[in-house]
Image (spheres, rainbow over the protein chains, first blue to last red):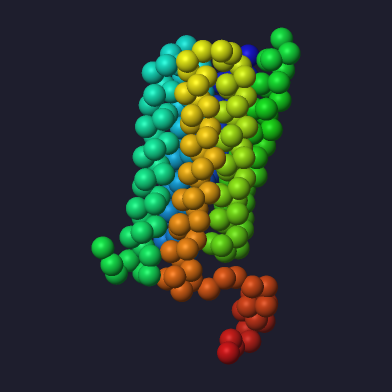
Length: 89
Length: 111
């Protein structure tokens, strides 16, 4: 089971790395924002999996909760900022 | 033993949906199409992986925390994607259509 979790962790890390392509060369700013949101979501899934791998579930799950909340707030604030072209705020 | 099998099946399904989501983010032609990959596929994939981990962990306090992350992702991820899509629509980003792409290939001037 431990090697299965390790394999899933490495696979999701590879998916996150190829998603960074869209952050780097997204045609519009909105492509970059949603790609960054996807990278953040994959990131806290990787954090929970790392908690299982290191047998330190309590600590890593608290960090993952903080990451999930921050990820949501970042995307919402960027959406408010770039509404109508980023002229307000 | 049955719980471990259920956990493995859930996690493999979740990783499949995460793969579909990453491929959709890379391959779809347009921002509005890419929101489908991030808003739906990514949500389902992360929910499946987290529920597989919750089944594997058993009855503990950390399982409750995993379920909290699961419900938060279920609510927050489509909301964030919707907010970004609405900001793009208000900014005036035009949706992709097949007709425009064909005209661009053939070199016809757009009206």
